[in-house]
Length: 191
Image 1 (cartoon, helix red, strand yellow):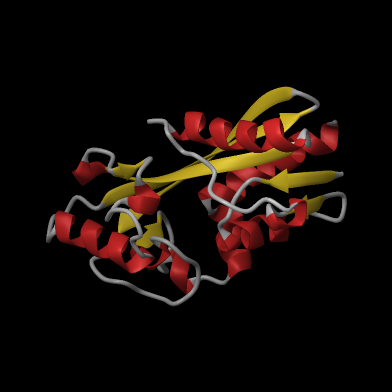
Image 2 (image 1 turned 90 degrees about the vertical axis):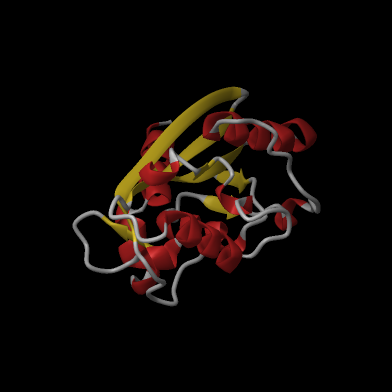
């Protein structure tokens, strides 16, 4: 089965590809000759994921899925949430976002956080949703060099390593995106 993953994020593409088995051929946006940005205009992860999937489906009429992910920090009242990728402003880097989070949190002891991913799938003109979540905490400084985004400052509950200290296989077993993708795969295998 061929599926388009509606993302320009090569890190996400790599993570999801490793989770899919030989029953699936994952196509990137460049594989379908799409260049440009996909809009994300909504206030929830679910709405943004669906907007991205519909954007590609409407133009290419091919089965596809998209995700939206947010880091929700208790001390910051759920921020950065839906704005996680651009928390420090337009054109920001992963480091810019991490620094803004660490500065906003200061020395607070309340470091509880969670990553949530929503995947929106359009298959045979029908829409489906899959959610993955992982609870953890925000570290006071970066640890590790793997992964991307907030991985160096996020330690999942029950582990002594940040996501950035885990290899991709370890991270995919417990991550928000890994859990959402596993639900997607289980659903597709039943189709």
